[in-house]
Image (cartoon, rainbow, N blue to C red):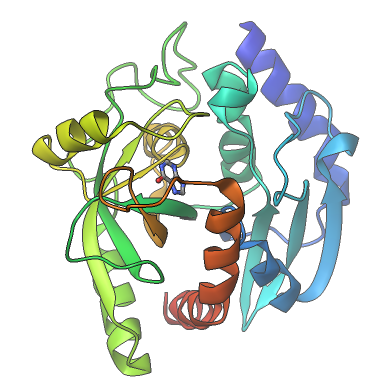
Length: 273
Ligand code: HPA
């Protein structure tokens, strides 16, 4: 057994006894979006600290726990806080939580994040359904010995974000009269924000939003055959597009401001899946 495999098995063994209902839908909440977790019914909390080999977030605005419970008749497992590559974890540690949630039973994954807007049609406060991503600037979480029990060595990435889930999200947004953009998310390593020249390059490459998470998790989830949806909350315009210097407090403030609409969309989306 590889080290990655062993870490995952140990994490699984330390948590499985605490799970009453097999989760169907996994949700990862990004910076400033964690409050959604409180809207789950029949909550059970599991702190990341209590899970063997689990990476714990060091970022302010990220709590560190799973919330299990119900949204309507759906059993969900929700991560209030995630870890990022820039915190110094290896990529296989960064994606351990996603792999764990799949092993616990979740076949659907909803990824959310705070992101900088590159597409000039976007504004801070907009929500964007992620249609595809660019991970070429971060190492693949699948590097190393393949864990055949999770997925194939050379997984297809031609439809990482499920077209079916995208269409459900579009219909949900339309019903709620929430404008929902579509676009490509590009993941950087962070932790620094980008330079204007980098943002220009990312724009030329086809990115609509930029952030420091999500795409690696989507890749690991796709490797395991999960159905994936992604939502970016545009918290700021990216470097050079915005005239003001970027800061984490601005990102959190704007995420807070969008939280109510984001939560409404996410809840109705989950009920419609
Ligand atoms: N760049 C990278 N990550 C981000 C940004 C950004 O502008 N906004 C929120 N997360």
